[in-house]
Image (cartoon, rainbow, N blue to C red; front, side, top):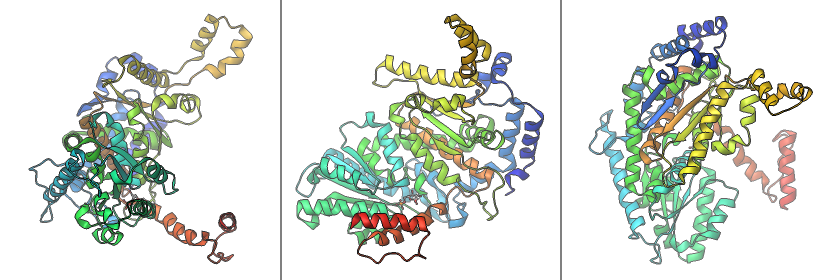
Length: 550
Ligand code: F6P
């Protein structure tokens, strides 16, 4: 693959950037009545309005050519076809196959991947039905009222986000708890709030070697066995989700109570696999099927739609424009729906663990900026916290506004206030407020001239700040599945353009290695680390902990 900057289109875009002043979005809207309608794409119950991006038709046409130049269609075929596009780990990347409907076939290298997917899904369906109906009972015969997912990263963020987003669809499912942090607080809360007799633990870890997850799972098992006084209770209160049957067995969970998946499912792409078991337990298998169907519809849209109308491809290329040609170092995601408040955290892992890379597939350095820092939370709260910077700060922060048209079961009037704020923020970022407008406003408010002069610089908004608006018809399993898949494909496309491996995560290893060593050194009964073991700062931190723990 060529380096990004060696692409002819990349050079043409740089050239255009240096010869054309950035357009004024106000002017573009004023002079081009068709812009808003033209710069839209819709798929699977989601509409993307990208007309408030800082580009004109000429730039957009060039950006779209990148897709051809990097052979996006070929790379997409390679992913869907099960080629080992995760080159550093020599693995296929087949989360798309997890979404295939019943009866479908997905042949890869002589194996029908779909058959394996459906076999595990059938077990997940049966088990979740048993738990939800009360057929699956605790060791003492109690109905399961609480489910605790113990996992971290991809084994936590996806299920936690979806269970929260779709909580209104849960029916009379069990209460859900998610434990990822190892500092003792979350698992401690579970122990205080839940009754072990009616609690089911799902230990979710692709590798089943993750320190935090195994430590929390051990604490949970000790609590359960200690309270129920019977080791055999584990069989009714612990299930595992993993690719590592041997480690599950060694931990003490019967592999009959294990739901498997495969090395071709990346952690951050895994909520569609057995990692989604908490979703079935919380919402029921029918809702999970709808989630999968939405993602699958987005897969087909992504695979079969030309770039100009392709929602994830447009999102990806607009992101490239912002990051690589407008120098945006971050990307704000602002969902205007309380139930989506975990979405930015989920997308952080998806995007930054995937494309937070500086080395290309061939091991050479990338010659441009890659993943921006993705951040954000529920939009209304953001408005009263960091939107100041987005409006008037010194950095360009592109925003993805995410709105939901249907209020669901909630108060229509309140829902409308939230939606009005989304629309207003996108407009305000685009329009800004000129000095003339600010002056006129202050005069109308009766401010004296000297006060107007003093305040004017503070009350001008530069505007011309880019955003996308993603509108969901309703927050339902199908549309949520489609939305998540759209972001997954956006990440994939950007990785293709930057020529990085979006599917490995070597950068998380070093901290893990050092943490094991430091953990042993924190034990006050162990010998003090020698002066040459660490730098002075690290030694100091270890020393303070040891002194405190004594
Ligand atoms: O530390 C990063 C990571 O490897 C993620 O990629 C992964 O989602 C998470 O840890 C959890 O890993 P596992 O599911 O193997 O416990």
